[in-house]
Every structure is written in structure tokens, then in C-alpha cells.
Image 1 (cartoon, rainbow, N blue to C red):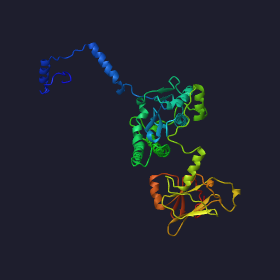
Image 2: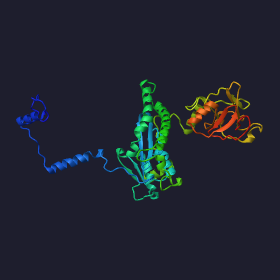
Image 3: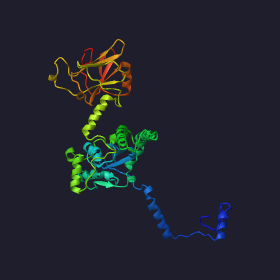
Image 4: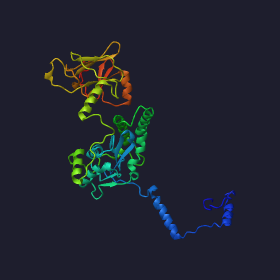
Length: 427
């Protein structure tokens, strides 16, 4: 009332209906009359301004392969982590995803769009926001438009990010499961002055490590999302069986570099080929791979407590300190038999059990020394006690070969054991 009648200050009366009427009569305040025409105009204006909060037309996708929604998540962009996912509109299945330091046209096309099209087929329409990071994907989608199931639809559509509901609704779950725990830990390290995010080298290292950890979390989220039941729709994996109606050969989908060259040649504009967060300390990819090999040999990785063990001069080595659920790796590829003595097996080791029930693994490998022999790629063999194996078997399903040797079992995730009846398990 003070706002309506600025000069009035005696408003100590109550706000009852009769009090307000007396006040209006004393000060000559009357009701403003509005004709029907102006009333309709004001109502139409209010509806138009508030239409963004309404959803008069429900979302619909007719079949798997109708609409493909692609969007990025930059909740951890300050630490050099960006997620990009692609979701089929009909089945709600996540058909492609990638985690990168900085959103990049070539990376999104190669790891998200191209992989999804090769595996499932080509979609009738790709829906993205107005970001420049999708230019290469839309360029290839438009060039392959004649291969779609329904060629009458637009090959792609760019809308506001708030209208890309199918993929936008997944980000809160990704944030809670993956981004927010990592972000809280990194912010805590910054508050403790353990991290200097102003340093370009620190930025690169933090980005590389966090991207790998976040990729693990995103992989697990994708698997659980695609396997869970959505109320009113079903299980995404079941709805996406068979893929898109139209399949496309991988020969028609160039790799990212060739697609970028074609984009530059036809449209006359260049795309950023490599995007990095911070300063890369390695001068070349070979230097980076060599550093990774050296690091893996001298320090345990995040999956196990193993360290590199090199053979003796005789070409043999053994480990006496086995632990429950530990795994022991033999690195290297198969070598020519004529390079070694015929009496030495190229790939052989044995499981035995000492009287103290402490298992021991003896490795017999060719007498070849040097770091080049030990490749980062490995084959893993697990040795556990019978009781531990029984507990593990209840919770996980894996192909197991039984070896009857004093209650010791051998499990292999990469090799197959021949059905020997020898007291040892030879490979």
C-alpha cells in the first residue's frame, strides 16, 4: 500500500478487508478496469514468456536410430576434465562416451560419434547444442545423410542446451557418482596448498590423472545405466537390440584426421587438432610412452601392488611372498624358439605349495634381460587358497579351470589351461 500511495504513511491499521476498503475510499484509490481485448493480450504475453517452463509436446522417438543426442559436461573444466556422451532417444541407451582434458572436435567425432555409428548404425538425426565442438560430427553426419533410414528428416538439429532433455537428465547422476567426489578431493588439495593450479605443468599432470580416474567412473556409470530398468520404457540394453535400421561400413567413416582434412578443404576453415590442458612436458608421443614404461617398471600401479622383477643370469626367478588375491604378471611377447636353448621352455611356470601352506610360484623364462623385453601389456594369472576362491566365486562369474593340487586353484583371465593331470599347472 505504501508502494501504491507513496505519500501515505498512516498504515498502522490492520489489513482486514474492511480496513483496506476504508483506506481506498479515503485516498481515492479505485480498481483499474481492463477491457477484454487488453486482457487477452496480457494473458497471451504471459503464456509466451512462460512457455519455456511448459512442455506441451511430449518427447517422442519412433525407433532405435531415430534421434541421437550428444552433449558435454564441464563441471570439472577447471581441472581439465570434460565428459561427452551420446544417447539414443528411443532406448535411452548411452551408445558412446569419452573423457578428455578439453572438448575437441576430432576427439568427439572419433571416440563418440564414429564409434557409435560403426557399432549400431547411422541415426536419422543428431541433436546437439550450438557449441563449436560438434562441427566435425555434424559435417560427417550431413555427408552421410543419404544413407539414413528416413532421409526426409533433417540430418542434424542444433537447439539450446536446455532443450536437449534426454542427455541433460543424465548429468546429475554423473555428477554425483563421478565428478563431485573427485572435485571435492582436488579442491581440498588446493586448499591445503598441495596443488598449484596456476602452474601449467601441474595443470597438465592433474588433468591427465583425473581424466583417467574419471573415465573409470564414467565407464561404470554407463554400464549400470544401460542395464537398469527405466520406469515406463524398459531396459536400455534390451530396447537397443539390433541397433539402427541402417548400418554403415567403417570404410565410409574416415578417421578424425582425414575427416578434419576434408572439412578444411571443403569449408575452408581449420579445426583445432590437439587440445591440451596445461603444458605437455613431453616433446613427442614416443617420449611419453617411454616414460610410462619406465614408471610402470619402477612403481606399483593403481590396480595392484606389483613391482617389476627381472630374471637372474640363469633366466629364472621366483616369488616367495604371495598374498591372498594377489596376481603375478609375466610381461613380454612370444619369441622365436631358435633364439634359446631347446631345453628351456619359452613360457612355463609352475604352482606348488610348501608344507607351511604358503603357496610359491616359480617362473622359468628365456634368458633374455633388459627393459625392452618387459612390455606394459601383460597376462595375469591368479593363485588363491580354496576358501578364498569359494568366497570369490559367490560374488563373481569367471571362467575357471580347476587344478587338483592340495586345494590350490589356478584362474586365468587371459590364458587357457590345458587339462594336464601333472601335479603342477604348466603354461
